[in-house]
Each structure stands twice: as structure tokens, then as C-alpha cells.
Length: 301
Image (cartoon, rainbow, N blue to C red):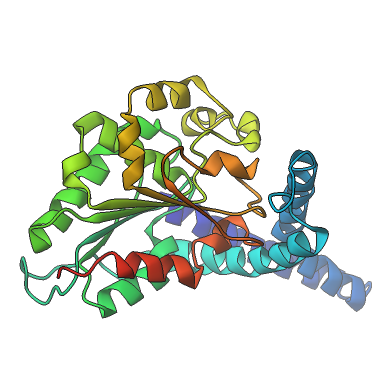
């Protein structure tokens, strides 16, 4: 569903930009080009608004938690490029580029299995660079599609359960789970439902709003409301988890996250919380140190 919606958006934007260019060319070629480009880069201005809100919500934070203007400007540029690739190509058109591991149990696997869980309004195409790298290193890798797109986070548990079962069967060992943004909450919801501590080697979350996000107040989707700051759903989730569970978590977060704000909401008490300065929300998923950390945790021996 996400791929089809994003395909329609990309094709619609391209069509609208082309129509603007053709209609306005005779009147003013310059303004026709400017208008067409404006349609194509509209998301860049939306991202700019998010970074303005980030600066406003982090004004009370103390350094080094408070992002500098230079950090936010650089993060805005990086996120503009990254989000164009992810939402304009990988997710709408290349979400099936790398299929899940299909080998026989134990055949060719030199590392522990990895389950990749994407976030809000995303799909498995987000993980294409990860799938390429992990499978190259012999990791049985499984990337899920969380649907329905705007359903309850609790309803994603069976999808994660199926992927974990396949990853476990591939090596006979508990897999490592990686969740970006809402994906980290989906992993926690799955662990609560099946009491999965013994079935998980480790959990890595990347820009996950563990305590919600200030932007959640603008969402009317079920899962969006669940991610509001200190929402009832998040409070109940935390109350039903044993504190020692968080020792299995590594939480990567950034002071320039334009979606999860304030930045500290992406951490968990007792977890290995690691701050990446200057990285925006989607770009954070592609930081090489995070992939390197995951690979370091997957050797079987």
C-alpha cells in the first residue's frame, strides 16, 4: 500500500511539474522552470519547517543536546537528499529489490539473523542499503512491511513474529532486531505480547520516539496518536515492560532529529543510549557506525 501511494505521489508531482512547464513556457520560460522546480522540491521546504520547529522545541536544552544552527542547516541539506532518494525511489519503486533470505536453515549463513522493521509511512525499501550489506556478510536478513499503514502499533506484532520465526529458523539462534522510528515501538509491542526476551539476541532502535514526539499532536492516525508525547499507549507499554528488558536495547538518537523531538525521547533508561550529533531522522538510519555496530553483534562464534 505504501509503495502504491508513494508511486502515485511521485508520478503526480512529475506530471504536475511537466504540465506547469508546458503551460508557462510561452509566457516566461524562467518562471516556468522555477515553478516546475518548486513543485519538485516542495518537500525541501516542508523539511525546513520541521527544522524550525526542532530549533524551537530544543531551545531549553543544554549543550551538547541543543543543536547549533550550522548542524541544523547541514542536517536539512542531508535530509533533503536522503528523503528524496528514499521516498522518491527506494520505497515506491524498489521495495522488492532485495528479497528476504531464502536459503535453507544454516546454509550459507555465517552470522546471526537480523530482522529489520521500518517506521511510520515507510516500507521495507527503506532498508535496501542494509539488506545489501547484511546479506553480503552472510546475515540471514528479513525486512517486514507494517500494514495497515495507519493501524495500531499493537497490530504489527504478528508481522514481526513471522519474521523473527524465519530468522530464528535460519540459524537456530535468536536474531537481532533493528527498528527505525516507529519500528522500534513495534518491536517493543511485539516483545510485550509474546514475552520475547529469550527469543531476542539484541534490539537496536534508530530515532525511535520511545516517549513520544512533539509532532505526534498533529497526527490523527491511530499509530500517530500513539506516538504523541507521553501518550496513554506509551505509558501503558512502559508500565508492562520489565526494566531489565531495556538492557537488551541500544538506542541511537540525534540532536538534529527533525521528527523525534525533544531528542531525549528516543532514549530508554538502562539502555545503551548513543547520540549521533547532526543527523536528521531518515539520514540517521544510514549512518555507517550504526550498521557497523549491528554487524559487530551478529557473528555466530
